[in-house]
Image (cartoon, rainbow, N blue to C red; front, side, top):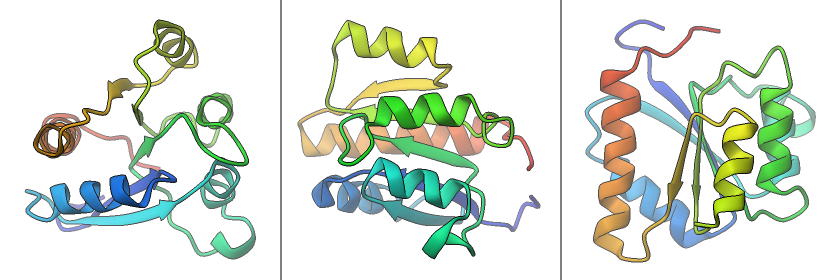
Length: 145
């Protein structure tokens, strides 16, 4: 990845409103990004493994993962990603409505890189996404493929 290459983000989220809020928060990002969105866990794994309609998908630099997803739960997706030699180095940020201690512990036990509970307030949600952007794209050095 060079300085001019866009940061590739995969958003795994089934709520269209949260997807739109995330896009809006990233509109004035400090870095150029390429955002892909899938709405369920099965599609997420197909995207990451470049299967089916996602054969041409590019490997993301960061995954924003909701836990409560249709078809395949985000907890299962996280475990599959972190258990896969080809995918485990991709940073995963869980961004979910859950604040249950069990979900937090399970996510970290599955080697999540960060767990964030989505704020219900619009302004706070935007602030959270911008803080993710600031930290992961200006502070952290992401691994290359």
